[in-house]
Image (cartoon, rainbow, N blue to C red; front, side, top):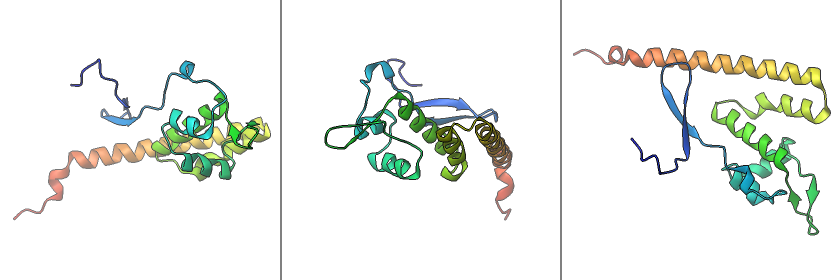
Length: 149
């Protein structure tokens, strides 16, 4: 067991399989952050890279709502929450193509499309959980994968 005084960079979550899986800890104390954030601060707060943030900007998943006098983007708490949602979805095995419809619907203020996108994501999550349960069952029978001599 780890020492409780040590801060871990992972959380353990139950995937409904009875097993615990380590995933990145995406929560940093937002009260310590001073918004708006520059791109490197945003990336650090979400535990990702500036390159990844730039890719999400190009994909239209993130936006800067302010700019410095030098033209650099500044990001609010909403951008950080979006980035964390993207990271969580990616860590769960979802593709950018899976989550794009939700962000585009949010950007357009289209509530019906938002609801449809959320339903589609729930379906993908359920599908992933089914795959993980099946894999877990197969792993419990790993002895059947060895050839008997």
